[in-house]
Image (cartoon, rainbow, N blue to C red):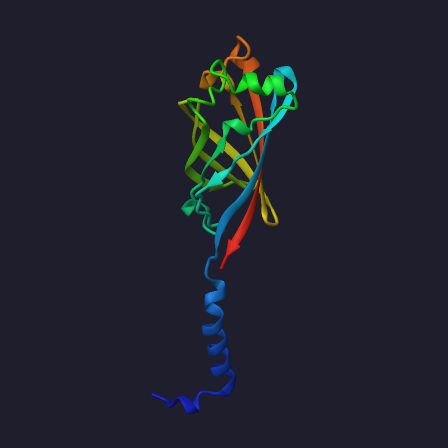
Length: 179
């Protein structure tokens, strides 16, 4: 075995850089620090938003299958630009915000797609759980997601036909990288 002093200086420098650089190449944990959630109730052309976002997600953008999305929003924060409609939507007939104050989501799988990634999971709304899938793309420190749901699947029957209860949802998640 050769003594360390006989290793050429360039090779020693290379190993030193490799060792010092290793912690920087390890995966940094990514957290969701905030969210903007908007929706369109398609058949009525009603746009709105919901906030009160809370997340305990664990994201690894370099190994998506190891990630988990978990969060909730407050029904009380539902806004459509019409105070009376908002008040009515939060009532027992629709969202029942007193009995079910939060909407919850927890992922069951996260995987890469051709355009970004998909998050599949369970949405709990008004005490009813249904599978749902979100499509996401990453833009810098933001994740932009979309999904479609039918409010009648959750006991919120604004229209009689299921297809008339379509809601298109958009999410903008702000990320924080934790070294």
